Image 1 (spheres, helix red, strand yellow):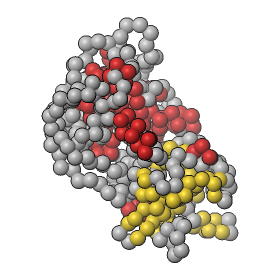
Image 2 (image 1 turned 90 degrees about the horizontal axis):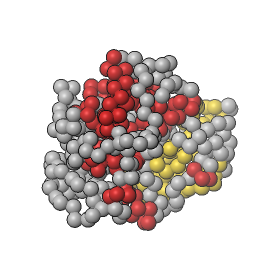
Image 3 (image 1 turned 90 degrees about the vertical axis):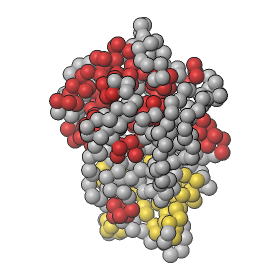
Image 4 (image 1 turned 180 degrees about the vertical axis):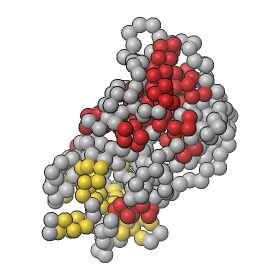
Length: 399
């Protein structure tokens, strides 16, 4: 990622945070399950478990504030409206329990999430989803930044947006009262962090919890040949310890390819898992520490995310790429950016999503222009013979 990965500050009223989930267990091991991919020794970490985290309920770069909290049209708007494309993921702003999920007067459909905080219960409210955009059920326990719904325009809405409320004392409890959600986010979140979609999918049942736990782990109930279904990576083109993880990581979204991931790793570190840049980027995928805290995942679920672990770094690389792909697809559809999708997400990967969106296309600095040109070109060396995805190498920067 090089120095371009430093988190870009956002407006003071919209401060974002991410939850770093830490699970016990680390050290060398040899997988006994044939569905487990190979691992390498881990660096022991003592990161604390983050609890009580607060995040903005839509992905970074996906929304604009269309109506603030306060007086409006002779009444009082008890939340903030965040305009975003229909279908944009709605994220749980906090951990907590779903106490309402479904039809509600004026909202079309809503979700109410109750969170126990030191000063009592606080409800967060998410409104205007269509029926198929409500992805949780009453009684579900959810985590901060877990996807719980999709942006819609149901109920009393003039366009697709999320109506978001915050109620200390509880939305469905007596004595609760609405406060300005933007001020609450600014005061509750950790400055400088960004909101991203939690890597595990929606957890709405015990069966789903089990399925998602397996899907996000390096150990899968299906054989490695099936979970590493992307056959476009040329055999022997990458170090053997990287090969299965690059293939698996590339399956996280359809727009991603194993050769592109391999070319990124070559560009970033030359496949050196212990790489450290002068700017402070770490590991084979060269994550800056702040970006790793937001996007790093434990590929096998047996310890804290480690930027020097090949499984963790490569799976996090693909996960973050897919998040950027989603942001750039929405921005392309809205006309906020122009250009090739691959070059756009590579630009966001190198110089930041906010900078790419602000410039309306590939960032116009020399490092990023070279990055979006060189990586697709290098991908050819990692591509197997035969029909392959369209990997273009035109120069970036069209506006």
